[in-house]
Length: 313
Image 1 (tube, rainbow, N blue to C red):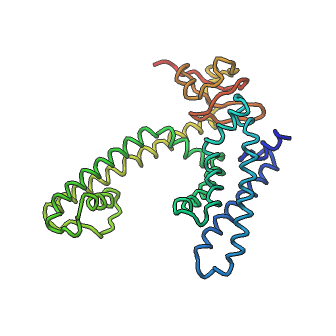
Image 2: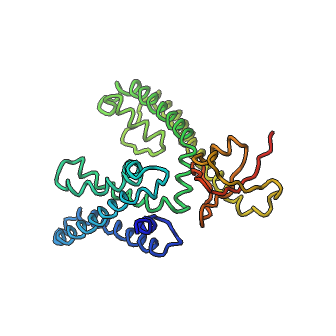
Image 3: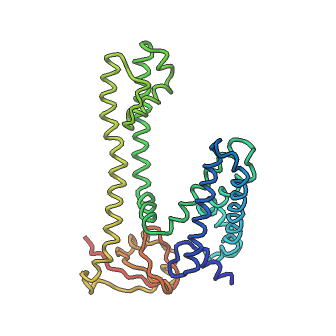
């Protein structure tokens, strides 16, 4: 019964009709909770506050029950761990943290502002629903694989913002002290300029300041294009990788092999195996499932992987 319950709670299991119905039910519950949260902000709907309160209690109760059941069945999510360790791992996983942040604000509806702000976390519950499906999984995979390049590009943008804010403050402070009062005022201007937003509430009036603004604006176009290009290239790589499965019949059969995952490979990620053995993994066969490999997919004991050796250069 515990295993069947785990299979129902698992999001994105298309082979289990009960699980699919549960996905639809929990999605409706989340949207109902979010809609009520928005409706409560309208003074015109204050007459329905009691109805909103009942809906919020019911939906939060459903979230609490789901959260408890997920903790209870966490051993099936991490079968290689002990039950206690698996539950601990779930509590600090992305899904566990989002579930917890969805429930906690209900106890602080009239408390400190920081606790009331946590009510926004329930919106992120939708990420957990969509994370198991291909469309969102492609996005998260690209962001994970390109995280180092994205962080580096954002660091460059941050340096440009700080440098331009200080320069603009130095040039414009004496000309308009009420506008460029301090370095933060320059930082606000540099942010709106480098990110090509251009609010127009703060702008230079001196000739030197305007010349600097032109240069900084051009730098901003290039700076914003860097992370955009990295993410776009990541999407192209990811879709090309997935398209190799559609061209599977056109691949040289002699270089393709099926490998049984034993203790040597169990626990390794797809990225580690491909780098160590100079091979490309096309497909993972696990029980009755066919899994498209991602860089961070962990191989499990008794998996069968379809690979092709990469010729040495």
